[in-house]
Image (cartoon, rainbow over the protein chains, first blue to last red):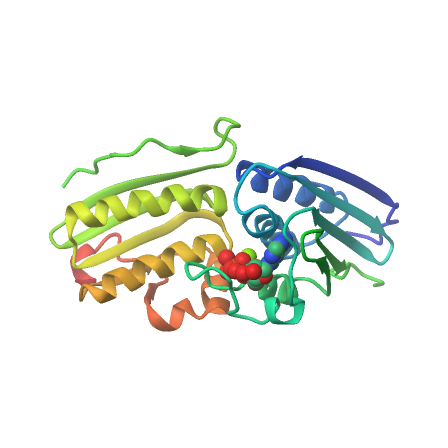
Length: 149
Length: 132
Ligand SMILES: Nc1ncnc2c1ncn2[C@@H]1O[C@H](COP(=O)(O)OP(=O)(O)OP(=O)(O)O)[C@@H](O)[C@H]1O
Ligand SMILES: [Mg+2]
């Protein structure tokens, strides 16, 4: 596709911490992302990253119970896509430790969520406060096969 | 043996949109589970229950997961696979993953699961005896 003019855009989605909303968030953000010319591969990467962050909010932030809100925002400018996933749940005491690959507070889990966000996105920032909640901010640069970028 | 569909589709509230279906069949000592749909935290819990129930019931030597129909997987889905692998290994059995799509294969590789279990890229679906 020829050079495209990327118009700024943003969206916000807020939902109860229920498992079925993970798919909803993933599809909504992927659809938003695909309003500009991205590759199928970039789209798959965005889907995994969103799925991981939203799953964490529900599973860890709210202990898997539908007792809180999760907010997902996606913002686009000419440089790329910023996705923010926020919960107001239990928070993370040691963020550096939580972000290490294979670290999990749940024996049944692999501890790969943050590792996938890290490898599929171009930027990852986590802010969290115990008992206040967690915010995960991810950035995806536009590259794809677009000429002139 | 004819394929027997023993489970209801695992479905999301939005009928038919985000859906994981599991079809089980037994061939000798091999339990086949053919998956179709998206494998995330929502479908993972249900899939774990279904697989555990079938492993309890069928006591197979090999569990084959045919993933050709899986269009999405994340760490929750990988966790279910690893959990079943561990169970089978403890019982002296093993697990084979067949025909993962490229995006699914990529996550299997990133997670290292491809190093501990067999992945059949093309899948033995036409030749079930060939991997027994
Ligand atoms: N939103 C959150 N609220 C509270 N704790 C969190 C949140 N997100 C992550 N954590 C903590 O960080 C740890 C690591 O998260 P990560 O997603 O990498 O692994 P996991 O969720 O435990 O396993 P997997 O993602 O492989 O299923 C979690 O085990 C949890 O303790
Ligand atoms: Mg996680």
